[in-house]
Image 1: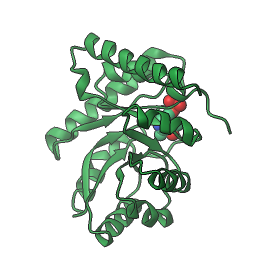
Image 2: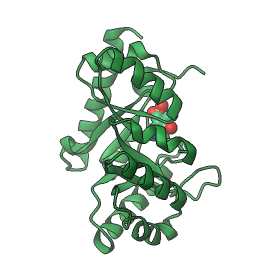
Image 3: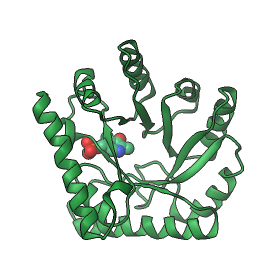
Image 4: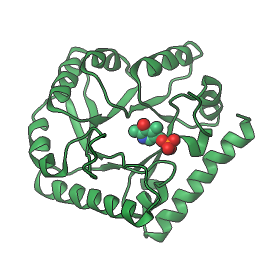
Length: 234
Ligand SMILES: *Cc1c(COP(=O)(O)O)cnc(C)c1O
C-alpha cells in the first residue's frame, strides 16, 4: 500500500480509539493498538516500523519467523504478539524468538505446560493471556467462561508464565449490541478473576469491525489488521 495511505489508516484507527476511550471516560494511553500483519507484505510492515510503530501481531509461527528473520537482517526489531492457535510442536520456535513478547492465545493446559517448559529452556519468562471462548462458539478455540477460574488457578503455578490477562476473538456479527454484550461479559469475567484469583492487567479484544465497541467496554489491547493494511490477500 502507499505509504501515506497506510500511515493515515493507522492514525485514523488511533483517533477512533481515542474517541471511543473518551466516550467511556477512559485514558486512551491505557490502550495498545496491535497492528495485525498476517498475510500482509514486509514492505508495509517496514513502512509502519519506520514511522515508529512497534507492536505487531501474527497468527502463524512460520510466517512470523520468516518475517522476523528478514526484518532482523535489516536491523529492524519489532515487538510481536502471537495471537493465533498455537500447536505444541511449534512452541520451541516461538520461544527462541526473544522479541516475541506475548502469547495471547493460551487455549489449553497442555499448551500452557509446553510454553512453560520451552520458556524455561530459553531462560526467560513469557507474558501470556488466556483465550476465552466467550460466545461458546464451536468453531473457536479458547477456554469456556465457566472453566476460566480453575484454568487460571492451574496455570498461575507455572514459574515461567506471567499470566497477564484475557483475550477473546468474537464471531463475526453485524449486531453491535450482541457484540457489546460479549465484550461486557469479558470485562465482567476479567474483573471477577482479578478480584478472586490474581490481579490481571490486559484485556485483549476487538478487531477491525468492532474495536471501538471493545474500547468502550474496557479493552486494553485491540488487534487491528484490515482497517490498517486493507483486505488480506490469500
Ligand atoms: C486476523 C486477526 C485479527 C485482525 O483481524 P481484522 O479483522 O483484519 O482486524 C485479530 N485477532 C486475531 C486473533 C486474528 O487472527
